[in-house]
Length: 152
Image: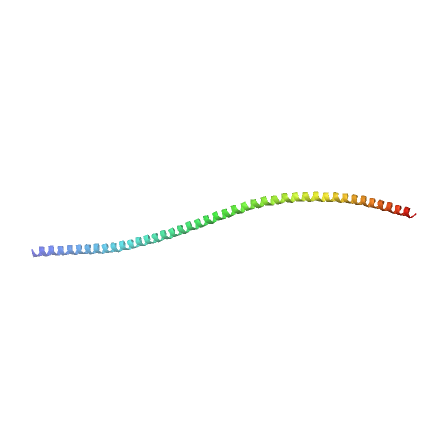
């Protein structure tokens, strides 16, 4: 009976050692799994932090792009207003220049009329002058003849 008890005790001890080895292996596997999970959680946390940084960076770039778009739009509107004002001034100057050209043509026509009138009046003057000189010459000739007759 002692042998049977010893055998059962040996078998129980052997079973206990097997269970102990299985328990130790499971414990080691569990710790290894915890390490892997912890590393995985760290990796996920890092990825989430990187993603958050990228999101914030993207948001900053988007905000900068929106501000730049607003500035460009504002500059474009200002340039369009300036161009519109410039175009209005150009049209106004065109009208003024056209008025000056018409005035110039009118003044040239008047000047030509005046030159023609002056020429005509000068011819009339020359005619009157020649006529007057002729009359004066004729009158002088009569006066001399009358004076010569009175002396004689």
